[in-house]
Length: 138
Image (tube, rainbow, N blue to C red; front, side, top):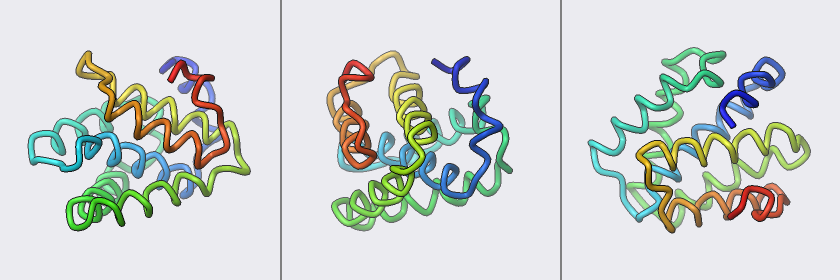
């Protein structure tokens, strides 16, 4: 999945894609309802090492990721709505939307356990994009 994304990455260099990707990563980090410092740091490291996201300045990605994490930590339900709305902005760009979903799956499964909460976060993002979750075996 990561190799497919690398092939398309150059086409996705837009602020909307970067924001949606960071919103997705924050949703995965907060999937269980909160984000502890270790989880936040681990997810940030995964973002920095993701080949697809290297097309963006790391500092900008970190800033956006932190922004979404802070929103989710302050008020999980409101932060979740905001993150999903950001992802939903790619509804008219299905290739970019699918790439964001794939990033969520890669980040969620990076620890070897793509758990039910993480799967739900990715499913919610699929619905916001108008994509059937079964396309990704969810």
